[in-house]
Length: 225
Ligand code: DX5
Ligand code: ZN
Image (cartoon, rainbow, N blue to C red; front, top):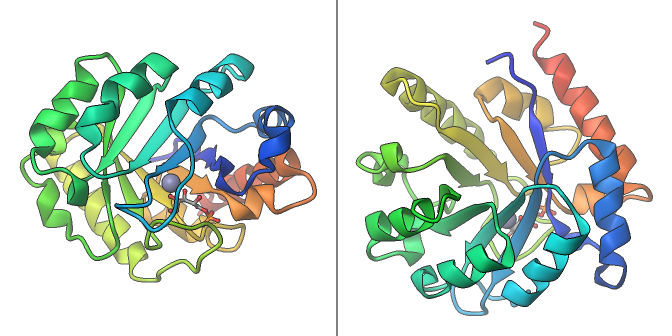
């Protein structure tokens, strides 16, 4: 540990008519990744956007694009998202029948590959594939919507995953997504999260960039104990 937390603002709660300026705000505030939530209305009960929007976003920011695919059968779209400029792609374990193949498809394009676990999915699904991923995304809400309540048992899950990764001597990063705001970011850092996604807490505020700054500042204090 000791490394600073990385903030990945999720544009799900941004003002889509002013997306470029909202992205610039969080970029200026110190965000290290931009989290893009892709939903298909099947895997999750909501629809967002696809590769053309990712390609447009690619043109207005230098931030790495962290594309979270909440879609059935994501294999069909890996290539399109890679071409659109995604840097990180994560797929849900629950949506992939051939998860090993899907992760390899992401890796062979030179992108960071991540596996996402819903709250009800056990860490045991990671056992054989942890060496194939650059990051694990732990959902701390049931995916589909922004501004939901953080599920408290996620803390223990993060702590357990931290132990497994450290015991194996891997450098897999832990990202957490859902219900994260100023008041729980510290506990996440202490449990071993390295990247936190935050949507409504950042884009629901007056000044998204200032909110990112405040989160980084709050998280930096959690290490000093
Ligand atoms: C939920 C999405 C999240 C969401 C987080 O399905 O994957 O990335 O945007 O939003 P907040 O921070 O509002 O919970
Ligand atoms: Zn997400």
